[in-house]
Image (tube, rainbow, N blue to C red; front, side, top):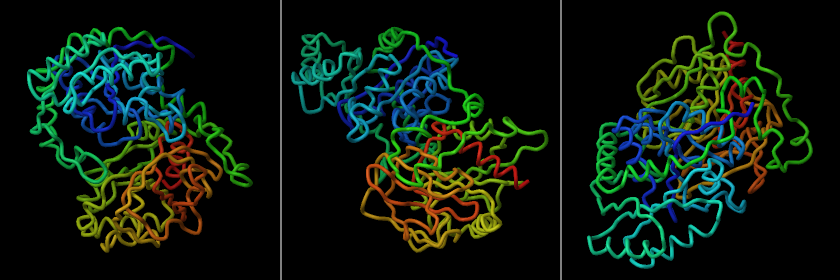
Length: 487
């Protein structure tokens, strides 16, 4: 069913990373929320950390819009799912406006997301080392793709009143509205480390202060009324909002038959059949408890995962491996997502009762889905500190950053995926685990390089690959069914 959906919306983009997108987007979200508006926060691409700040600014879940992992056709429905009932939606872009998946043209770029959402773009320009040249820069971005509607500019890191005058004069000549001017403000800076900003969960009180300061900076430097007027120029979208229940009923996602799969032989012949979920929404009786790791060490999660598990019939309960010594009562399935266990290896190791509980659950055949940080936690050790010992593998920090989109096919049947299930995902880590794959690997990567990765053992599926389950809802259904079978 196709319907018309409309909400005022803006895409916050930049010529390059480091220009101030997160500062502006988060500040705008907070400033408009302070006006009493219901603001829907979104982030283009696979980033987990920025949405945490967006959620803090708006009081709503930060949601990702990733055209590579979920497919372009899901961008607008997922957006509508998050923005339904809101007064304004703000989408923070990724990298530079036209940067996307390597070698794939505009795929997964901010520009593509803006076009799919029919949303005006506000370009955040780091003006710290230029004056009149800013007009040439902005003109190039405005004219590069006529389908991208650049509605105005916010100038960041402006040094003085005189500097601002020169920048405004240049952009006036180019016919580009200046919607805001932000001065250099290092006191608002948010601390970073090897994978980006420090997540909200690790600095909640300080993060609240940072978001408040960003809101004040944006209020003082940006024309909020003009920005809202620009947001209201976005036309209706011809799409229905994504629904986890409807996605499960349809029995699959866009990537099962995606051209992304280039595997041959048995890898290409073993696709799942997409059968309808048994007991959709929960069979009569108690729902199976799916325990999801949270807290400061495990902050990487997409909101749609818990929604899909719930729609498939699970009762989702969060626990903190840094503090909780037992799994939630009645745990029948265990999800351990991404995060920064390397920053908390001593504390995770010191929680011996929980490590033993996780190991016992896995040894008994309990379904476990682990991504990246979860993979490290299930190994024998991390930087020499004992972990759960579920996997015969050891992990350590590395100087090398592994980063990028991946196309993968499941090589082994597991509680998460049937062999042959094809997904697009993302790797983002500065650790290595040895060996990198078990006797039954989790995934075979088909692009950009061909290799096997991860572990399937009894009910455990553990891998570095981050995936977005909205692309293939059958994984949530399959996992919930595996958990229900253990009640």
